[in-house]
Length: 291
Image 1 (tube, rainbow, N blue to C red):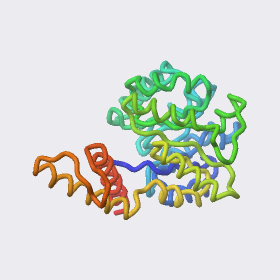
Image 2 (image 1 turned 90 degrees about the vertical axis):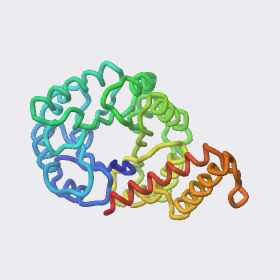
Image 3 (image 1 turned 60 degrees about the vertical axis):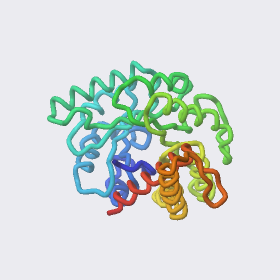
């Protein structure tokens, strides 16, 4: 199973930045045809990003297409659903109909191009009021979507919200993405980028905050952010050690007919054990990726 702590953006029309991004330790790289790619270069860049995805690389490679509602969205999709591309990122997704239409299009392109059904992952970005209002239905739509992302830049613009350093104004919207994901039976979401590159401490605090809210990953726009996010969103050695002790001690207790114990003065029952097992699974996936 893949790990999704970090999604690093790179403008698709900048070959050197694309090459560098794909060499870094990001769990996934997003080659951008949308906001980071000038209008005059969008069409020509389609083949460039596909070729980049097909070369040797360290992590997963996604392409952020333009929104399906734009003049480039359909052409982007037709161009990039190709062998070597792990998935597409759909910006400004707003309705269930949009994700179902995208799913239908991708499914047919997979079949035409000899790809396995469901080979192309899709990550919608929720970044408008309408999208957030429909996020529970989007997450529960039963499409190929396994995780969504939250995009604060366009969302705060759409809502006329001031995006502050503390990000306290984002709390209800982030929490709604986590709740909708869980209720819809998909994975925890991926969080928005941090745009102040001169404030690395602010970035770390943002990652720590979203980890506590239940997000599994963070979108990044600068290479130096990748290591920080990978660190914060990975279980620590102490957490893994404690989790293994919890699971082992509880297994022994169950054999003796007990479903609640104390370990180092802390009460342990099934929810604590399940959390410990989750931490161990995450650590094992990260370790497998590093090999």
